[in-house]
Each structure stands twice: as structure tokens, then as C-alpha cells.
Length: 209
Image 1: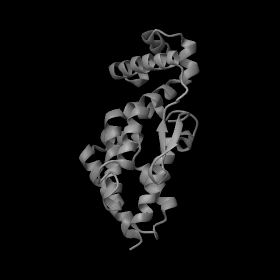
Image 2: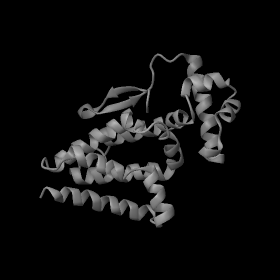
Image 3: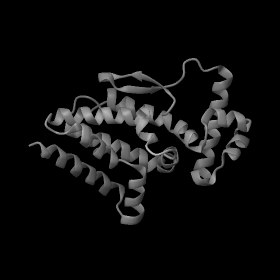
């Protein structure tokens, strides 16, 4: 996510990548920190885990932890990086309907369902990763990649669709905080949320008809 190297994938989409110049000792520390943090987050919940606890569990100095990740949001983003890379690989070069080869409406629905799966599995981490100054997540490479992908699919569906506007509307519906509200406060399960997303996509697709 923020601060990572970004390569170029299919159709010009930026793809998350690691730092090829990372020193071996720095890499080992990074792996220890991420493993410790993921375990603690899973056991206690992200809100209950301090940076000091992560440093102690990883066996590294607090200065090393803060220099590398900044804060708990940066740490959560780093844990999510691998999941994001795997998902991006699937929608850029994977099998249809998520990957190339399916009609754009079906690809967009499959993309939304994939994001919903990520939120269902890693919602707490995603929420923690999104903390920070207002609008920070919109400036990161993950949002940029998702937006470019959705924008392109909307244009493929129908060039008359205002993709500049609707790309962000689509992504706003694929938000961890919104998902949590639907689940906890409204009582929607994952199946209904996915069904609602399909209805949203087909409705947008019909606006230019």
C-alpha cells in the first residue's frame, strides 16, 4: 500500500511490489514484525494491540518498528499488502470472470465480490489501515489501481457512462466501514451485500442505455 514500489501490470494498471533493494537483515526484521503483528491482531483485535506489544513480541526495538511502519495504520497496511498483491494478480491476469475474458459487467461484479471477500476476512485490519489524515486512502496505490480497473470496466460496459464519477461510487460501496455497518446495524449478511452490489452494477450499466 502507501510507500511501496509499484510496477505496471496489464493494461497499464499499477501493481504493488516489494522493495528490491531491501537489505537481508531489514527483511528479516520486517518479516518478524509482520508475523508478530498478525498473530496479535488475530488474537486480541487490532484496537487492543499497541505498537509496544508488537515490538516486544517481534523482539525488535520500538525505534525500528516506528521507523519502518510509522504507526499501527502503517503496520496494518503492510500486513494487507500480500493479500492485495494476490487479488490484483487475479483481476489483472487471472481467470474469468474476475480476470480478462468475461463480459465487463460480469468482471465488475466479480471484482466487487472479491473485495467483499477481502473485507469479510480482513475487515478489522482494513479499518485500521484506513486511519490517518482525511483522504489518505484515496492517494495510495491500492485505491489508484482499483479505481483504474473499475474505470476501465465501466468504459467497456458503455462509453456513455460517466466513469470518472461512477468509479468512485462503485468503490464507495466496497468499503470496510460500510460493510461493518450493513452487517452489524442493518443486519445484512455477506450474500445480500454481494447481491446488492450486483444490482448496483447492473443499475449503473443501465444508466447509459
